[in-house]
Image (cartoon, rainbow, N blue to C red; front, side):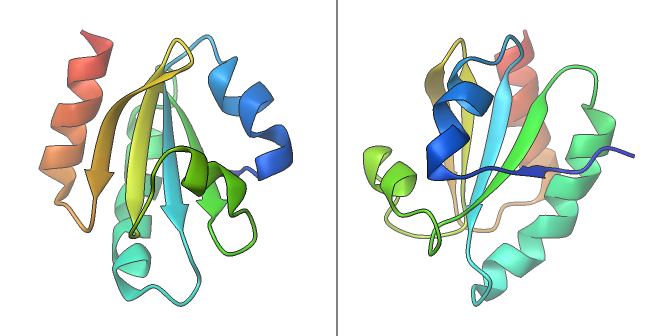
Length: 108
C-alpha cells in the first residue's frame, strides 16, 4: 500500500527535486481542518498513481523554509513538481476529480 512519505526541509531537494518521476507534495499542518479533509484523498491518489508519481507530505509548522521558498501562504497547498520544477499549485480543499486532472496533465 502506497502512502505519502513525510519529507522535511533538510531532505526536500533530494527527495522531491531530484526525483525521476513527477512528485506531489501535500503541505499541511496538524491543526488545519481542510488539510485533514484532503489527506484521505491524497492517500487514495498515492495508491492509484503509485507507479507513476511520488507523494510526499510536508508539515509546514515543523518545516517553514520550504513553504516560504515556494510562496505557500495558506494550507493545504498541493504542489506538483516535474523535472525538479513546480508545475502546478493547488490551494485549499479540492475534489479528487480535480486533483486527478492536475496529475494527469503532468503525466501527459
